[in-house]
Length: 236
Image 1: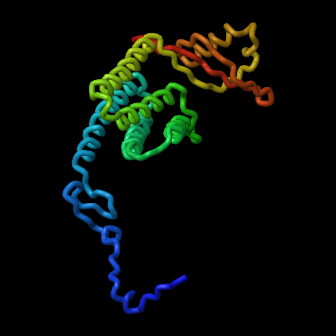
Image 2 (image 1 turned 120 degrees about the horizontal axis):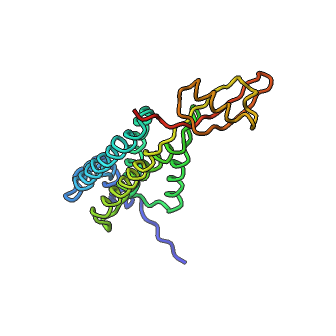
């Protein structure tokens, strides 16, 4: 068995070449241009595509929120801000994450997270939650379509979603029903045999065209009842 002993001078003469690419913070290449920590600072193609998709998404979102939702739900103006911000945030989250290698389970989990959001401060009607769900879907569709899907296909998807929502709202608006929750003190009229008297009393005191009622809660300690009245607006 033989050993080769290298002199210390040989170690000192051996040049050490550090990895220049790893030590450079700001780099330049003819293909990607300037990059910071190996991340391109500006990619013209991807940036222009992102701006174009955002403009398309904002256009269809404005049509859906302002011309469909607001037209048939003018009383819920405060939700316009929520719908626009939800759509924009979902769009950018999906657009920036679509190039990442994420699993399908993570993608569906992210979608379910936004789809199951609830507001703790105020109960949101199911119809408004449906509109919120559609706004989220529009942002995801416009952000995550690939080059294998033509512009005609995803634009058609946007048009169909908005058109169907408008048609359904238009049909339902002909017999649109409103409701109010009121506290009622004439506890004797809540009996089933006095239902017609209760209906007449509520119509006379509210001036509304009430066509059905629902007794939600009865408090015998205070002799009050909580009643939901359903009515339609009178045509002028």
